[in-house]
View 1 (cartoon, rainbow, N blue to C red):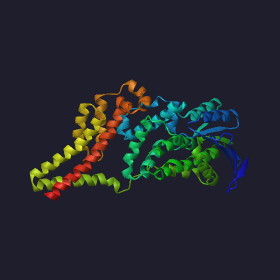
View 2 (cartoon, one colour; view 1 turned 135 degrees about the vertical axis):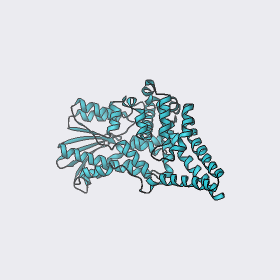
View 3 (cartoon, rainbow, N blue to C red; view 1 turned 135 degrees about the horizontal axis):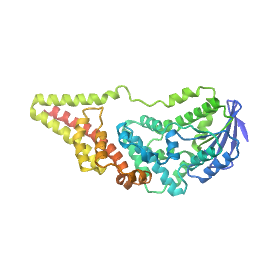
View 4 (cartoon, one colour; view 1 turned 90 degrees about the vertical axis):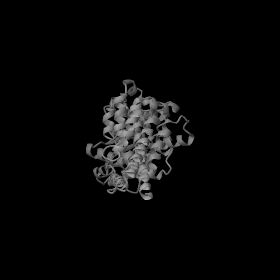
Length: 413
């Protein structure tokens, strides 16, 4: 069965399996067949295998970015990461989020008895066996996470991260309603939608932008390599959006679309100066305090050290850091908070890495340990990530609390 859309492209529908919708779009004498998969369905993996075996396709596209593809074909790659370099480059939070997403996939695997990303693994394996090129069409997960973070109001960001962690380490069974979401969308969408207060904040970067991005990648590959028939394996929830973009954007330059959606979000120009403005206000407060009396100035410095250092040390302690790491947090946070180029978490995590280096076994157990709350604290790799995050949060909260305390002393003096 086929029909034409408003732009004149022919769209064929084959719904032989309700959970695996298939739509073929004909553009410029070339075909793109989209198979909508359910990430908890073995039938999806079987359908991928069945379609590739027909020999009708000259390329197979998958809803993966280079990072997620690497995690599938080289699952031990994370075990070889340079943890100190991850912390130094400011990627600790991203690595923690990726582990959390992986833990959610593992949780699904345990409940439904299917390997995480099974349909993608089958697509890659069978395409390679058939000597077909494998095209990675999804946007890099780090860019998507950053655009999600940027699209959510600042006061919801801590809750967003906390919700992600709590949802993936939960031992509760996934409900029937959540299973339906999994069948309609993809792993990223369903993970965030479990706890998001307002899914509208997430929809644009998580769903609609990726629909547009993957459509542009398919158009680009089809045009540049003259593929006559591409099989695209994507989450069922992307089918309608991608169909719209492929049929309506086929005359646009896909490189322009890809470049626009790959842009890393930047903070407002005034926001990047905010940490320096806070430092200036704190230092000005110290100066005014000492001008009034040495006692007031000394009290302000003590407030700054005890509150800022104390909360950062508390964060490290909650993560079960080494005693010397906790002491490092106490003394480092008040100093690093006066230098926005160096974060307290970086210094504290580096100290923990030096004092208790992760063992080979920690890296080997990383994927399994990340699926439980206890595992995050027991595995030295994830514990260092927690130390980084919690000591950073403690110092950030301490900066504002201590700042208001200093302001209070000035106003009452």
